[in-house]
Length: 314
Image (tube, rainbow, N blue to C red; front, side):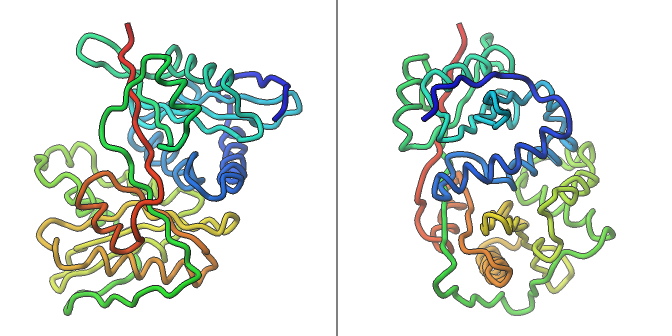
């Protein structure tokens, strides 16, 4: 633990994006590949479809960086959707003072959300992070909402062979001509009751931003094709060859094809593919009962939980 104090500045240029990526890798590995901070894949995903495609930026207003005098990054604070704050802290530089300063910035400078007529900010914390819990409680935060169930599977053992339902096939996503269909079936899987005009406003071009992510590989963007050609189920896997980990996000099934074991089959295919590439551990996170039942079956029970703490500002 160092006694030098890091200095805060806001995100400035594209160079900061590329400096934060190895910082997140280093912290992830130092935390024994426990998801106390983001993986590089999640940072990329937020940057490209999140900021560039869905308007979750600009980065210059939504990311703060704390640097040591020698230029090393000590911590990063970023949003992910309105009113959400994520603290990425290097264990070598972590102090109560630093965490409090990051929360000050989250509450005063980052985008916050409306809770009725009052502003609110939500902070995420590992369920075992005693220091952050104590800080959040002292500052008036309360646990609110469902936690993220974090599932982790080490790939040094056997992976089940799960055949896909007869008549369906698993393959990699096609070229750009298939992106409108991939976008539509993905949106409908997660928004089954939303009016179709909502999708018309969104369009399909946001999927091009996903393919801009540095870790994106089309051979790991998997679809289950129904006999009639529908993209019935899907998953995208993000393989980080430096950390030798795979992050599965998203997993979904078009509603008419649910309860046929398609998501389970495509996830197992994904695990086989990333292990052949050299991955030694895979991750997936879920919030709903249905999602976590699937992930329990494929990856085993959650090894950790990330909890949402909310503060309604006076």
